[in-house]
Image 1 (tube, rainbow, N blue to C red):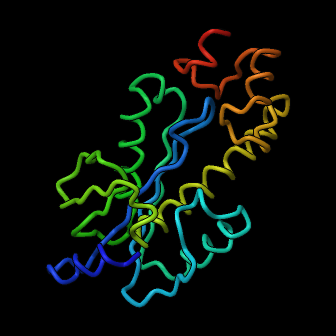
Image 2: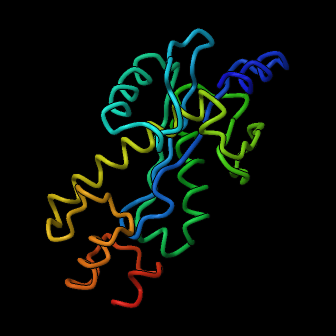
Amino acid sequence: MLEYETTARAKGYHAIAGVDEAGRGPLAGPVVAAAVMLAPDSQLTGLDDSKKLSPKAREKFSLIIKEQALSYGIGVIGVEEIDKINILQASLLAMKNGVEDLLEKPNLLLIDGNQRIDTEIKQWTIVKGDSLSESIAAASVLAKVTRDKLMEQYHEQFPLYEFNKHKGYGTRLHRDLIRKYGPCPIHRRTFKGVSEFI
């Protein structure tokens, strides 16, 4: 999990931020990204891609990451913007905003996936980076935990849709509720599974 960070430090990059997003696939809610700068001696044994961790483990790691990180930033792009510019561009913008939210400026970004973001900072894109880089895994955890909390808040606002259970993803339950009640204000109206019920 530290191979990319070790290689980067050997090349003279000492302010490294991992960047990842959560919520590209759901039918509702924002896309959220995080950028995390870890110290070389950070202790995050057992950290992995957020999708492979239980909600309880993600919560635990989220607190440890926030304590140990040199800096972390969060970017959130809402449904109106997602529908306007498309989910890929919204995800890249969320990642850019997460990087710009860092208190310390990195000199290298390790970005999950194969798409670069709009910044002059040097960046390496890493496919499946959330399983290969500790910094990206830390960012994936913060993004996922932040987004899940937002979806729980939306559940209070729109209880009919049970966002606390599926977090906006296209589960059978969620699709049945959209079919029954129609879309609510946080549904992504350009997404299949929502657009046909408008």
